[in-house]
Amino acid sequence: MPSRFRRQRVLIVGCGDVGLRVAALLLQRTRVLALTSSPARVQALRGLGITAVSGNLDAPATIARLAGLATRVIHLAPPPNHDASSRVDPRTTALARVLRRRTPPRALIYGSTSGVYGNCNGEWVDETRPVNPQTARAYRRVHAEATLRWFGQASGSSVHILRIPGIYAPDRDGGTPRERLQRGAPVLVDSEDVFTNHIHADDLARACAAALWRAKPQRITNVNDDSQLKMGAYFDMAADLYGLARPLRLTRAEAQLALPAMQLSFMGESRRLVNKRLKQELRLNLRYPTASTGLL
Image 1 (spheres, rainbow, N blue to C red):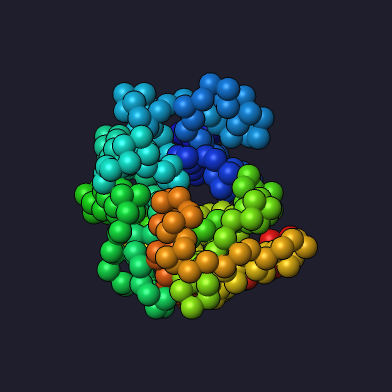
Image 2 (image 1 turned 90 degrees about the vertical axis):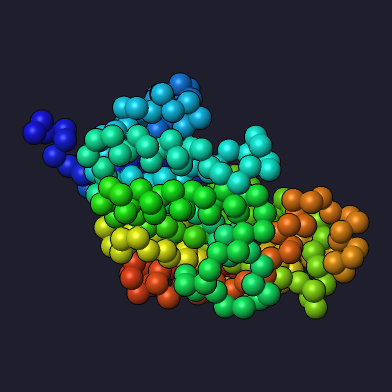
């Protein structure tokens, strides 16, 4: 084979902030390719040592060249949001169809969301818990997961799903609660508050990279840190770290009158994710085991 094809070729689909962090980890030992629909990003990606592949998941004909291109794939592209009521992810469907046309990748890692579990009333949640989506966003993720698991079974590709909660990092756009605290956005009173889960963007990138080689096929892993915080406690902690005022507390009834529907939807689901597989199967040692260690 030509020398350019002898190294493992990893394709990142959805190469935003987390994708770039993954690429930085992989460039020393693999050839990294990234799908982009933006001509303006081609030179930027090349400048980082990433091979840019032009194409758009919303226009399936433009991604035909992805067939057989990579030995491993990391799929981080979110479902489209132009139809808020849709429960399917056409982007993942299009990607799976293309990847089946020639030699499928040995491994495909998909970045899903812990929102597929729905509201668990603060209970501990491991990967064996059945999905219970309660928003159209979560239904689209469930559809994507099912599409890729079918793809893995049909093609022999080792598909692994990472279920990801809130991503944070001080060097990520909007990656800390600072702006929300400065706006004075309220949270729920403790008695009605919900448990939330977090992962630092660097630890998430490390989990994606580890999963490419260590993840078990047709399996799911929660990717979260060790924090056990209610949403209000998380914002109180951040406020103290930044020297800002703690947020106002509202009852749920008051919040329903004062807050937009999107924000309320995140306040309606409470769960505590178990990360045992992350540590034991992917063998990931968290650099930021709690949010307090990574917010500054």
